[in-house]
Every structure is written in C-alpha cells, then in structure tokens.
Length: 423
Image (cartoon, rainbow, N blue to C red; front, side, top):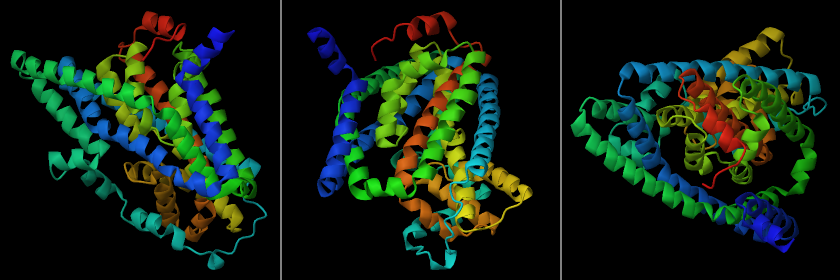
C-alpha cells in the first residue's frame, strides 16, 4: 500500500492535479496571495517558450532533410490543411448548433450602449489589424533573426521548411549539418524534461491567480455559458475526434490516457505551447514519423484550433442573444464562414481567440462589438477548455496525416498505448 502511494506521487499528472487543487484553495481562501502567485505559471510558460523556436526549427529541418523531396513535403502539407479545414468547420458547426439549442445568453437583455468597452480596447485594436493580406505578409519575416526573436511560429516554419529543403539538396555535405542539428535537438528535449518538473508549481500558480483574481462569483454569473462551452468541447472530443480516432484504429481513451500529463498541464496553464515539445516527442514514440510530426503539429497550432473554433461561434451567438440582436439562419451561416478565416488570421497573437472573435463581430456589422465586454471576465475559465480541445485535436490530426502518408507504425502505437513509456 505504501509503495503504491509513493508510486502515485511520483507521477507527473498526479503532482499537477495536487498543484491545481492547492492553487484553487489558495485563490479562494486568500485572493490577494493567489493573484501574487501568477509568476509561477507565467515563468513556466516562458521557460517552455524559450525553447519552442529552436525545437520547431530543429524538428522540421531534420525531418524534411531526411524526407528529401519537395513533392513529399507539399503532399504532407496539403493533406494536413485539408484535414484542418474539414475538422475546424465541424467544430464551428457544432458550436453554432449547441449555442442555438441551449441559448446561454437568452434573457440577459444587455444594452450595448451602456457597456464599458475600455477593457476590450486592446483586442479590438488588434482585430482591426488582422486581414488576409496582413496574415500572408506576416508569414514572411523581415529577417530570420526577427522570426526567432519574436517567436512567430509561422515564420519559423517557413524558414525551417526552406532550410530543410536546401540541406536535402546538398546530399552528403548536408548530412553532416543535419546530424549536428539533430544532436542539438536531443539536448533541447533534455532541457524540456528538466523544466517539466516545475509543472505542478505552474499549475498551482495559474489556478491560484485565476480564482484569486476573478473569484468563484464569476463562475456563478456566467456559469451557463462556461458549462455550455465545456459541454460542447466534450461533445466534439467524444463524437468527432472519437470517430476519427476510431476510424484510424487508435482508441481515443487510450490516447487521452497516454497524453494525460499534457492535458492536465494545458488545462491548468491554459496554454498548449507549454506542452508542444513533449507532444512532439510522444507522437514520435507513438509511431508517427518525425517529418510528419515536425510539419503537422506546429502548423496545427495555427490552422487547427478546434477549441477556439467552438468558442468563436458560441461567443458570437451568445453576445447576440444577450443583447437581443436577432440573427437569421443565413447570417449565422455567414458568421460560420467568417470564422473559418478569422480563426487563422490572429494566430500567434496574445489573446488570439478573443482577437479572432472581435474580428468576426467587426466584419459582420450586425452583432455589437461592445458585447465582448460580457466575455472578458470568463475568458480565462473557458480558455482552458479551448486549449485542451486544441491539444487533443492536433494530436489526432498528426496521427491521421501520418497514417495517410503510410508513416505511422501501427505495431509501435499498439505497444505504446498498452504500456506508456517514460518521457
């Protein structure tokens, strides 16, 4: 019995759960102290972000250099984008259906003219700067150094793909450089393992801050919307992602158990970036080829935000319901179409989901943008659901594309899912 308890405490997922529970207790009992613990969560995410650019660069370069074919890279990319668009559309549609059925904003009778929009000025300003042209131009860095300094994922991916293809053309001369980058990459993953030991403290700090700053009262005031977002996310994971994983002969529950550490850390910190390096390692160990993992997973963080897609349609219709703004079926379908673009246009920007929602409302000229004020207080709570859904969705997406490419080791996956290795 004693040995079992010791073993349980040694697992990262259990340590993260304890950290989160202690954080909730501190935030509830001592709100001021809870708010002061915010640096614990922020510091952990900054440590991980410190490594993201070189890890993404190294993984993509090594993968593509070993792939050795521009045609092959293009094929993987196109398959991934097709999958992303289909699944994102399903996420948007499910959010639209659920919010219309449950009507979380009905009866609030808010007057947009009386809402104080000062709290959303940052988001609405950023939303005005988002567009198709600016999005495309933003993919091209002004310099390679800028891409890495700013941590812009799309710019890093672009440069990494080009550099990997260039090395692939150098044959033996390129192989030496690839081997060096691969060795450095393994060292970076070693650093990630050290940092992950701080995850329980990060969970404690993030949860203590959230409860301390926003309070349990916020949950009560907007509990219906929060509950509806979590319910919709669960429906999407079980029905859509569950069906996709079943068709690809990967049991969803076993996969969720395999990445349970990453799910808990993402939920506590509301950040998928915090676990990106570990997800890359785990998907490789699961049997996905490194080139596919290196291309699909980082790209999915931009183009396959399923949780954010759910929130966009639910948030937009919630504001319409709360402000008594009537919408026809055609207008709601237009919102869905607009969301397909705005959900990508704000990628890599702080508060991306909120900015995307602001851009959606601004482009419609129907739902009052001032209604975003209603969501400011609960954004941190629903952000956890968004992040976890995004994480699981991108994990499944990587497996699907790897299987399409015949770059998925089924036997290795079965072995891993039936007995998780140490990472």
